[in-house]
Image 1 (cartoon, rainbow, N blue to C red):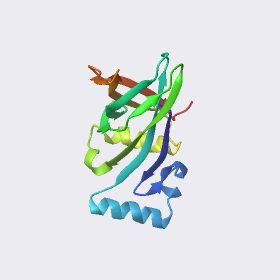
Image 2: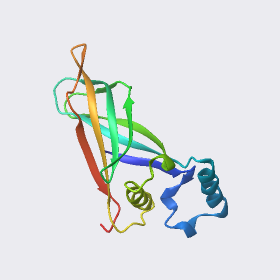
Image 3: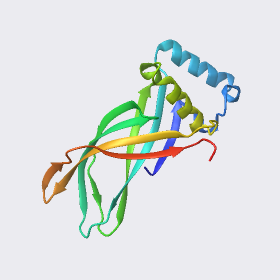
Image 4: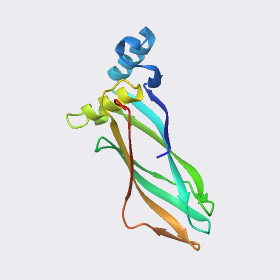
Length: 162
C-alpha cells in the first residue's frame, strides 16, 4: 500500500478534523443531513504500488480486491484497469477508489473499527488502525490471462501513538 488520499465523510475532508468541536456549523449540518437521508458516504483513494523485479514487463489484466479495516471487511470490488509494470524493479501506482455508506456497515462488529479509522484519518486516535487489502490478480502470461489461485494480502498500520 503506497498511500491513502482524499478521505472524506459526507463530502467533508476529515484530515483536518480532530474532534466534533472542529466541525463548522455547516459541516455538522452536512453530516446530520446525510445521517437523516440514510447515507453517510465515506470516500477515499487507496493507492497500491506494484513492483516488478523480473527482467520482462509484467502485465496485470485486472484484480479483485477486499478491503478490511481492523480485520473487519468493509468493501469489495474489481479493478478492471490494465497495468504494465516495467522490468527491473519498475513500479506503477494502482488507485482503488473506495466509496461506502457508513450506515450500511456500522453494526456492533464494525463501529469501533470505523470510529478508530476515522479518528486516525484525523490523527486523533491513541491506537493504530490496521488497513489491509486482499487482491486476486489476473496477469498475462504471454497473451493468456491467468488468475492467481488465491488472494494476496497487503497491510499496513497508521495513526496511534507512534
